[in-house]
Length: 85
Image 1 (cartoon, rainbow, N blue to C red):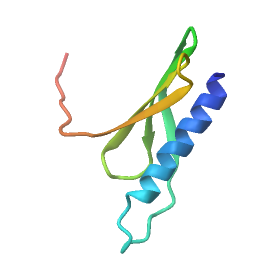
Image 2 (tube, one colour):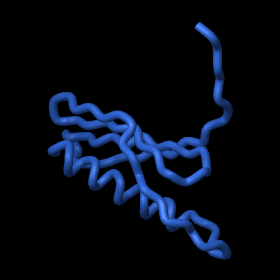
Image 3 (cartoon, rainbow, N blue to C red):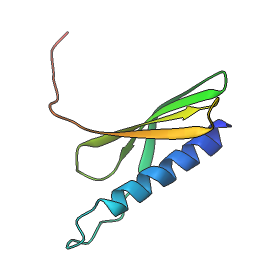
Image 4 (cartoon, rainbow, N blue to C red):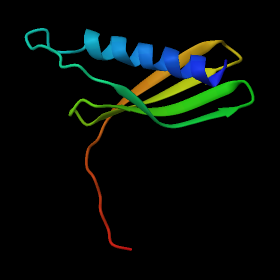
């Protein structure tokens, strides 16, 4: 799958996930989905994506070129670590 098609499909899946899992009693604010990192190796793609929502979520999208399937994992940030180097 071409990278632009992979990212477009990934963002669509993530958008639908967010809308379907949002609190139906609260209005969902307008948000954007950004690609943090993306890579293609042979027939496979992988990307890390984030949104402009303040929910501490990020998403990992993987395209399995052998099976023709996209998998999206949703993660919630547990903690941010900071260290001087």
